[in-house]
Amino acid sequence: MYLTGFADEAAKDIEGQIRVTKELGWENIESRSVNGKNIHDISDEEFEIVYGKLADAGVRISCFGSAIANWGKKITEPFDSSLEETKRAIPRMRRLGCKLIRIMSFAVIEGREPDDQMEQERFRRVRELKKMFDDGGITAVHENCMNYGGMGWTYTLKLIENVPGLKLVYDTGNPVFTDDRTKAKPYPKQSSWEFYRHVKEHIEYVHIKDGIWNALENKIQYTFAGEGNGDVKRIVKDLLDSGYDGGFSMEPHLAVVFHDKSVQSEEAVKYANYVEYGRRFMSVLKELGYSED
Image (tube, rainbow, N blue to C red; front, side, top):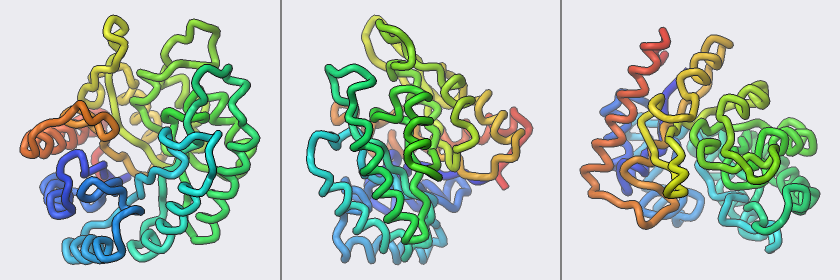
């Protein structure tokens, strides 16, 4: 078991991301953005600088937090952008020695019923993406986010059934604010524990996020891990008790929400928050009787 995280929530530049990682005593970063651009979108020159700084610091990339097939990509639109991102990501991952990449299954089509989501086209595209990564010696892990597979555990399992061998990155916090389309309307929010227990055998990697749904304001209030409704402690303990030996990747969303430009904060606040989040999660591990290897 090892600890890692979206260090772009602490610092925009790679120097700050490395610094915060080492301050926590960790050796891994889940790389999403550097200076505001996804790692598969920065220039070759920028990538070489990032590669060099990581190598000099002895910090590894545990996973690419890619934008491939994510909530910003519509299944009704051409597939080109995700294919191009995949082609750019593979050689960079191989150079960094990174074996995991987060992908999704395209945005939910709003206004359509759960059984009217062009699922066969989604399955076809995700199969193609997975094959590209398989051929490159890389494991694609699907996240339960704002996409087809994130509509509920049955949709994730149907995705796996139609994309044989697909692995998962399970995000503990996403169910807290996501409609459960396995239930009848009006859709309740999902149970993180219920989702987890149905997909557990396919989990390769874990995002640690937590929060409380504010029904009056119709939004989530993010919290430190274990202080919200994401069943973080219960899930982490169950995984570790079952022999899980993968990564726990911090995604605090407290000082900054990556995909919400309205939630910002000073750089020093973001940095300090990330450190505090990581330290508190390490305390959770100790409380559960575990510590990082």
